[in-house]
Image 1 (tube, rainbow, N blue to C red):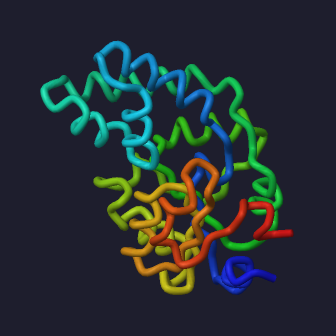
Image 2: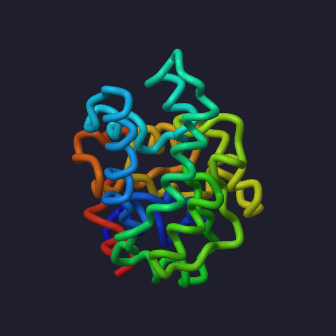
Length: 206
């Protein structure tokens, strides 16, 4: 058993990101943000690199400082809810969600989008789902993970965070949890702040 797998098995609770960790929504994300980028004359790759792991409403304030942020965020929310084609569960996700280990999903999606993507992937939503609707500030702010641990009734120091983005890893570390980085959407060198790195989700629970 690897150190990462041992940390997961010995944790009191798992706080897992959604996109890029439990599900692959990359095709849908690419389509939605490509249209946004072209509409505003921005580079799609740069936009996606920035928004990944962050709530759209917060990313848009940085990307379009002079725009109507509420309107732009609402447009993104609607576009993402319409487009869940190709969303699929990653290997190991169903086993993790159905394994009986105390678990919360902590995502930068809205609650509605998280549930729509889970349904599209054929995965169950856990009882505790912390979304962009749950906190005032998204990742890398640690509030989302602290809230998830509180809802589960587990000290954050006894939790393990599963994350694929630098912003999420920073949030987990600031919260006080151990963090396992998954290089599913980012190269390993971008995840160096994680306490452990795993090859993928399946390797942690096999």
